[in-house]
Length: 306
Image (tube, rainbow, N blue to C red; front, top):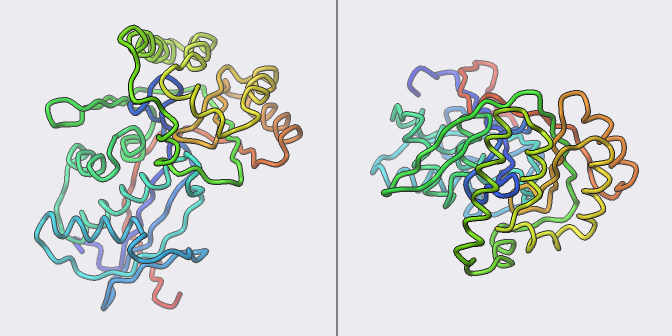
């Protein structure tokens, strides 16, 4: 196991993608994590706490580990992978992207591939289909990505003095279904307008012009006008969050989670307000995860008895 004879632990942050106009391009890592405990085993075994009632063939960790062995034409030593996660499934907080990144980290260790950060991104985006979630899960922080000449390019930008309030519904929204709500195309002028909103939003982030960030974030024309029907009280929530101190509100990824952006110190008031008025949803104060995926040796992580 390349120096991890006593097993190893992988920690991968979840993420919020798009941030409004940055459709399929911008993502931010958040402090909700999937943690994987990996140990030697006589056969491959994937378990989770709490248990997940899914078939092995539907387990992203299993399928990506299998596909990577085929891609590299290797047979990895079998392992027991125990998953613990506080990233809710199918809620727009990057659960599938975090699992893909985790699987790549597992195979990187087991197969002693010594992948570079960029090689990990190319693989992760290949499995996910785009990089807006996998890039922040790999690198942490705020990451902007694009695909050009058969390669994903990215930049990681510093983000400070920001808190996030997540409003998480109990119902799921599959990315495939959410994408089905989108139009097949936009006019040239609409595309120019939409991309310019994303450009200004990023510039405002760097200059900490929060009112301008929020203005651009809430001016998306690529996906939010079509997806907001997933969250029936979306407009009302935006208004109440803004009154409580949020400078911008947007759908997280494919939804249905809604993310409210606040200056440091203002998030708790937003949580209090929204928890009271939207009690049917879970409302949580989140932080930007500055670190991306991490791999640690841990002789205490043996889980053979679980």
